[in-house]
Image 1: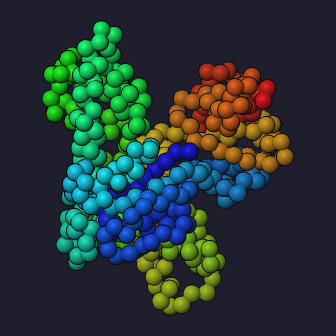
Image 2: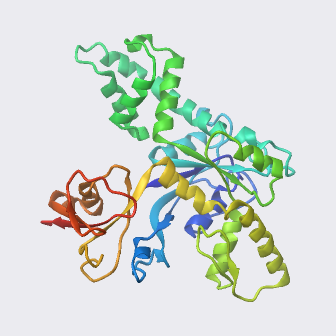
Image 3: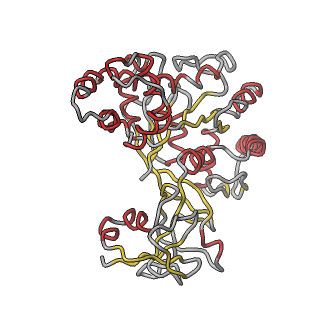
Length: 392
């Protein structure tokens, strides 16, 4: 399962984002380091279900009238403060937790209501632009420290006649989630001395930065837009990087209200309808939230998750079935499962995603949209329905 991590300074709204996105109970408080141990839960990426192309809707519990929610892991870790790579705050613990994440959502307090340490201040007092790059910088410096600490082993290996720097660095960076292909791509993008003994701190930092960008892409969630000064939001959205305006509190309120039958709302919707009894105070709060959502196209929580999965990580959603004609499994359930796979994946990759035994016994596959057999090299497209024929 894909893993997305929520990062940022304390009190920026990470735990509220996490609670809204996973419906899991965590501590949420107005002071730094509310989160000590990482919270792990299941959230979902949203996409159009293939059942929209049929007369009836599918049977999956993760489909709501054609809105398909595909499970992914969400990780909420301790807040990050300046100097985290040197151990400040809970920095080392924070950064260690990020090693297994595939992408990172940097939750920023767009209101400027928390200072650089995550302590509450007057709204607008702190410049949120200062919180954009420091998460990347702390991660880059932390990884550079790991590279530096292990560089002696690389230089020792370089004395061997069969030394290969790609292999040596891949072995070092595997724990960070870097593959051999990632390391090779980074080395091709950089200028560096042939002899590892001649590498400088700047060379190692450049390597760390490039590897981090490839293995831990970051999207910014400009949170608390419902109370943020307009100029703050405009400046954040004007950055040359992916920024999604969000109100995690608004999303949490809507999900709670939907569970209570007060509103009709599905995560990722641009708006909602009030369908239950509410007080004048509740109606006023919902109307205010409706205005914020109308301005930004929703609460932004689902949009941030979707961007991480489908844009940063470039995943496609594929649907394995046992009958290509009816799109059902062995029990007759229509479109029971959905998998997020890297773009360029094949039916064989999908078979292994379902189960290693299915992959080992793979024979061929049938495209459920065309009802025709496809080859092993066929690249899956978003929304493909695939019958996998296997000996297992």
